[in-house]
Length: 98
Image (cartoon, rainbow, N blue to C red; front, side, top):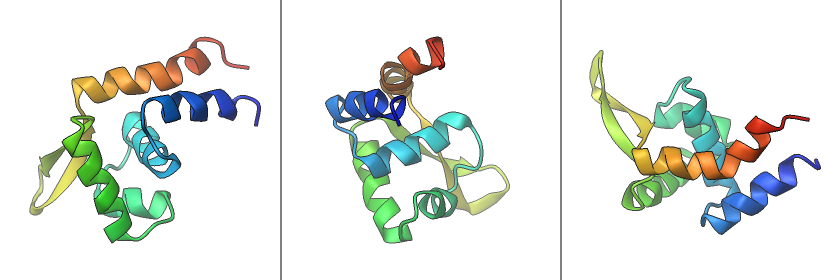
């Protein structure tokens, strides 16, 4: 828990809620970035995840990208600004793992 508190504090300074942070960490990890998966991972409804993603898009932290094999779907990616934000939030922990 001691390692988590600084991450949460830095995320808060960036204006990120805990739910937004969970979603961003999932995106940052580069695994499945479909909104339905992100919602399940964050233990929220699809509508709740969409609200958070809409806010992150408006803040230019993430962007929606058409899925390569399904025209009806899309994935979520970090923008360059989003990568910078996640760097500030996670970098100290990544540089000095306990």
